Image (cartoon, rainbow, N blue to C red; front, side, top):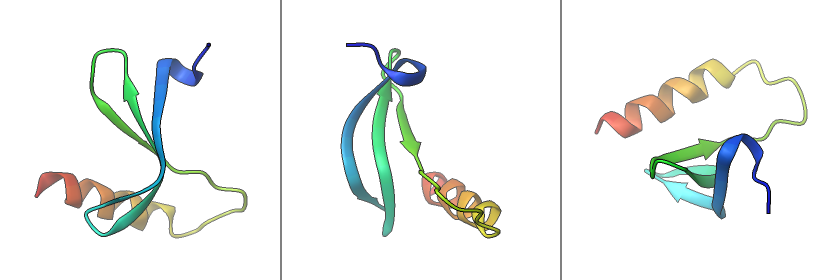
Length: 58
């Protein structure tokens, strides 16, 4: 099975640090990746990215 961007999906709709993650995936090198899906323009995407970044620093 071919995976998008060499990511293997692990779990959809996963909660990480109190925030919903659309898709939790893993890279070939074993690192986790968080994928967010957008179907409309979202002007708060930068704030969302900042919250995710702050969550991984904790």
